[in-house]
Structures are given as C-alpha cells and as structure tokens.
Image (cartoon, rainbow, N blue to C red; front, side, top):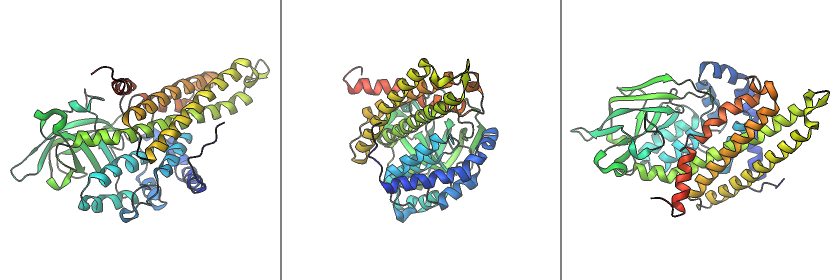
Length: 383
C-alpha cells in the first residue's frame, strides 16, 4: 500500500480523538436516529464542546484555526463508522466558510461562534423541485421592499440539516432578469415569519440525516442578512463548489475502503461448501481488484487535497475527483455486498447501509453527469 503523507502525528491524534467521540456519543444512538429520521441536537453541542465543529475557522470566531486536513480526518472517520446522520461537514466546511469568506464582521460575530459551539445548526439551500443540479435556473426570488429589505418567496428541497437548521444560506434570484448574474445569498434564520419546514424526507439511505423541504412565503429578510454582494451569489457558489465536491470524494473513498475491510472479515469467517469464502479464487481476485481501485482513488484524493491546501485545486480537477471516487465507491460496495450473499441484503450488516448511503454520492453536489460536462468543457468540448 502506498503510504499516506498528508497527515502529521497531530492529525492522527485528532482522528483518534474523534473516533472515540463517535464510539461514545454517536454509534450507540445511530440506529435509533435512523428510525426517527434525525439526530439529537445534544450531539451537536457535545461535538462543539470537544472542538469537532468548525475546526478550520479562526480562533477569534470560536474555531481552532486548524488546516482542513483535520476536517478531512473527521470526514473519513464518519464514513468508516457509517455514522452518516451527522451533518457536521456541511455545517463546518460548507456553510461556515461562506460566512467567513463573504460575511460582514457583524455576521461573523453573530453566527460563527455559536456554530462552533453547536448552539445553532446550519444548512445551505440550493436545490429546488424541478431544478436539481441547474443552479442557474433557481426560481426562489427575493425582491426589495420600500425599506430596502428583502421579501423572499420560493421552495427548496433535499436540504441536509434542513429540519434541525437554525440558520440557512438561501440561494435566490434578487434580479431574475439577469439570470445567474442576478443570484444572491441570503441568511435566513429560524423564527422568521413565513419560513416553514416541510416534512423530513424519507430516503433510500442516509436515514438518520434530517433532509427536508423548506418553504418561504413572503419572508422578510433584513438587508443586513445579505451574504456578500448582491448579484454575486452564483460566483460564490462556483468558487466554493470544488471543496464541496472534494468532501464527497473523501467520504466515498473512505466508505469504499471500509466496505473492503468489512468484507475481508466476513469472507474469512463465512464458510461455503465447508471452506471459507476467502479461500475461493473468485473472492481473492475480486477483492484484489477492488483494493487496487480504491488505492488509486485514495492517492488521487490525497493529491487533490495537497492542491487544495496550496490554493491550486481547480473546478475540473475537483469534478474529476468527485466523479471518479463516487463511481469507484459504487462499484466496490456493490461487489462487496455480492460477496456477503444474502446477508449483504440485511440492514443489520454494515455493507447494506453502505450500499444505501453511498448511492447518493453520485447525485448530490452536482450529478456525475454534470461532473462530466464540467470536465468536457475544460477540455474545450461543448459550449
């Protein structure tokens, strides 16, 4: 196996600490959370107390000022433990960076420390019914009233952390006539009149994750809750999407490796015709092939993270990582499930959860078909 050189001993100590947190505070409750469709808010507060929320934020806003490799370690351990109900990475490494990079001093002071403590849970609302990955076509709109504040109308769907959310970055058209150039980001808070949350959506996988619909009916959003400059929302989204797509690649790769590790244990113990399943050539060759693919994915992810840390990761390369790693994860987990036989179809086995949870990685963050379009355009093909 190619040694990983990304992580220092300090990163690994942090990883071990987070793994212990999962074992104590998350894993014992995760099955119950899957049954009801959301995690306890208390686990967010406990994560904040231990420094596991927003670790890459500056200390002045409640973070640790750590590099993103600490967050990467958390993403990997979350995937390996199959604790997919946690929406920590979206909160810490998608929403928080938007506010840190584009927010006013007042917005940063108002929201970021409470996010780091787990006192408020955050989400970002991009997807809409009938729109999907096409962010240029969002219908949610926000027009200014006579006082210069925004009146927000529209609906969002598939929103991770949506049901628990206290703060939502909403993608809306503030000038629909300008298309993508008329897109802005608004900070919508729990309790604003007209802001309602729909039902928690029942999904194929990620059953403990509180994915929901959001509705905005004449929600009055103060001008002070505009995030960044008006009309720059689409630009901000494009700037931040590479890191979001890298997070998906990181999780998919870790999930695929864990599937192989779980399957190795199973095929050594399980006997067919009096012999361990691992003794059959088909099993050995299949697992060897899958391990080679995951090794290649991991090396690519690590190299992309090196580029990200150096500020050199571009959108096409991030799209390649998301596309390649999620496709590999899908194949690996499917093959590993097959090696489990009938038990692979039983929800009590981790491989069944992995099969259900990982499938969405080829859809969210932009479908893999969109990733191919991004890559093709970077090659000078198409529009």
